[in-house]
Image (cartoon, rainbow, N blue to C red; front, top):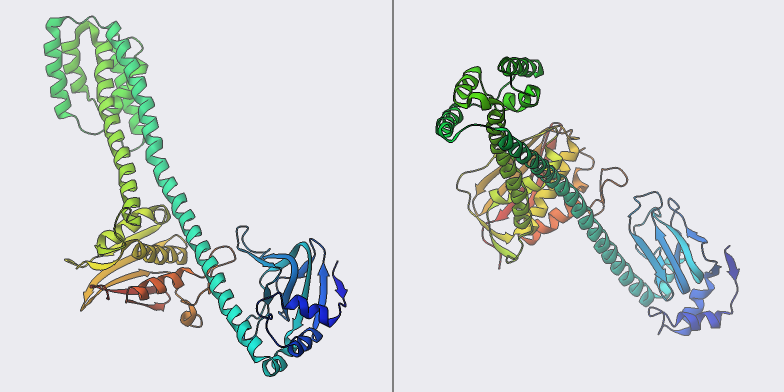
Length: 468
């Protein structure tokens, strides 16, 4: 529970002098200051400020610790700490309109509060203190911005990691399925080898027929599952008419490898009495060919994703180098595939023979990521993302457009401001476009936006030669 204290002013002044901004101020000035303050003590767990309240006080922490966070925001939102010897809360010239966090005492805490109604008088009486407090305000803005930027980067990394894990999961799962299928194929081959009675003289003829059949095979194509079932029934009837044991076991693999009646007749002529086991062996070998292709495709997909990650981060490469813009965009699209594949069509309009630019490649990829991510969110997962490049004098233009609802005119001028966002609570920090703007400006480029309902275009211009 909050306790109001009445320590003698001289003792409070002595405690204030332990705080850097007050340490060397005149005694009379500090006596006036403490005369306008309230002295309070909090028990651990007590609330000192609440979200949504109007900011009315400057806090001078004499001892203890207060932690504040947005309790109605995301669970992983930033935590702000105010410890003994610090000054916080409402500072001179702050634009804070509403308190965005709830602050609680972590340990028993002793502090002073100075009401904003005394600020005007303080400006005249204590100009040196005001100057120092404005410096604290600037430091606080820098620290908060740095924390939010770090949070934004971690959030973006988390989304990319989750998407990459999802993309890697599909080919890795396919690889495991293929490995299990290969083990089953090897077991069938061993069983067929024990069952066959074909002699050495017939092996050459059978091998020739197998090569002929392989050369004429085409991928199995069925209009629907009924067509597949009809073909399987026809194969089973053919096998049973030739007294092949356990014909039903062979049927699925023979239908899958697309053996026609003519293939079966040709093979049966060469296999003789060993038709069953030899067909099992041949169909299994054909299935193993297909599995090998699946393994190659899956492993290639994994390799492509790993390569994309290395290119995206410019791992083991110099920070500033010649960057192929088209390749940079394609790498980012590969990384962002998980967010685009469901209902978004990507249209590419790349200019031929686009010159390379001297820039920080990983930072440019961060620009493309933020713009593509925002476009996907604006289209709510369904629409057309258009990426266009062009050579404009000494610049390369990259335009990222979407056919979403557009940016409302009343907020268009603020979209590059730090912490401004049109997304809901927990969906964005308002730093994505701020980061885009800073990266592009650091590269001596520019970023502009044109937006009407159904057509929003972010245009990024990067100089071809890096500024010295």
